[in-house]
Image (cartoon, rainbow, N blue to C red):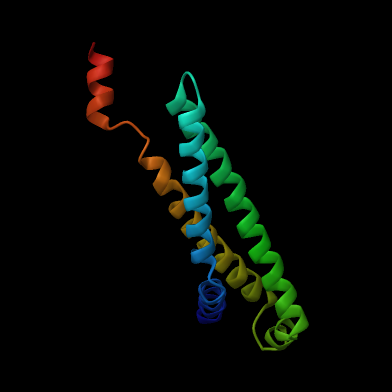
Length: 135
């Protein structure tokens, strides 16, 4: 179990060192700006169009960023012979797999939470929903 946690921690640390959160912040800023522009251009249902575009852009960007990070991380490890070094250790290969998977899953969850925050600004509050359903 310590080997799995160590591999997962190193994977998350690699994401931090690659400035993945900075990239995510820039993408969120660009998506917010583009959706605000579209809000100003739309004639009707501007808020719905803005939220739909923002959600679609953030979903595509999150998938692209996570996929790119996983691919580049695995290629870098293969080129640096880190994979061979880790697999030569006296631990099961499944531990390496679970550690990498756990690290990538944690990075994906962090990015998903970061990309969901701007959408929370457009979600109606619980009190507003209760008032609308009571009328």
